[in-house]
Image 1 (cartoon, one colour):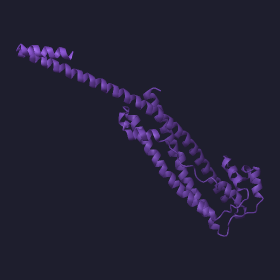
Image 2 (cartoon, helix red, strand yellow):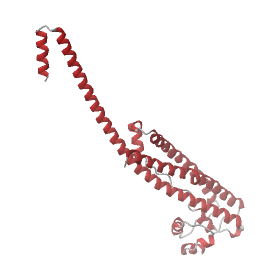
Image 3 (tube, helix red, strand yellow):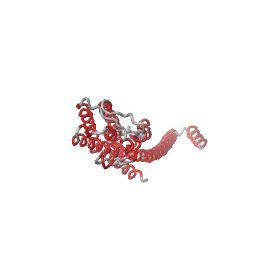
Length: 271
């Protein structure tokens, strides 16, 4: 084909047919330009197809990460609620009992689990989307905005955790001045407390043989300073206030946002 064009140009030039040669040259240039444009269009189409395939891959992976996050958040939510319930039981027990009736063992049982576990976000896909610049390739603006919002919220929750931990540590320091932990069966007792999820009235709840065995040891609270107990309880009540924000507002909203983002991704990318 190229040889044909060359021969045609040479023949027209040899015959001194300027106008025909010019028209032919222009036509040849147009053909070349059209060919380049078609090639570029095909290349752009292939690139867009590959980008869309990558976005769908990211979307599926992000959904899996979000589902793991929701499971993790459910666990933390339930743990934080249980801690709040125990703090209520502690406050009620101290308020409704005489000083000499408050057991060292019962205070241990009601305050052993003092903070929910740290967040363990599944950020691998989200981080890759951000680092690769693929966020701008998402055509659905609501999805891209929700991804950014979710990322921001999770980092805010990390900051909240450290605030909660600081208050929990402060409560623990107050408690350490008050409680005697020197039980021979402390490891078994701690495991019993960890597995116990329903804390109501103390005398009705702790009926496990491990608890009964611990009752036989005459270890008393440090009651030389009556204000120690009040200070410890007040520290836990402040912790309960922070946990209330997590369980009533932040954690439910974050779980809801994650689920809605999952639904949007599945609807947008049809999987």
